[in-house]
Image (cartoon, rainbow, N blue to C red; front, side, top):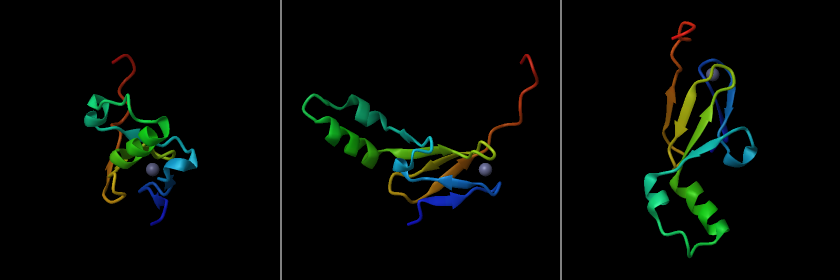
Length: 87
Ligand SMILES: [Zn+2]
């Protein structure tokens, strides 16, 4: 599976979590409720990566992409046009 894809604007979007390109995790609420006192930092990080979707913004057009945790479906969200100043 490729670690990047092309945005509709033509920019290349990196989806490899460990690439250091401002990629974020969308952590499910169930992970926050969990008792984490018995889990090591390393195991917690691994579990967060496994159970979270990846969120990344296109540097070209600011589209937001949400990539399902299984690395499958990708949803994209385009920002609304700039709001008028002062609104
Ligand atoms: Zn784009």
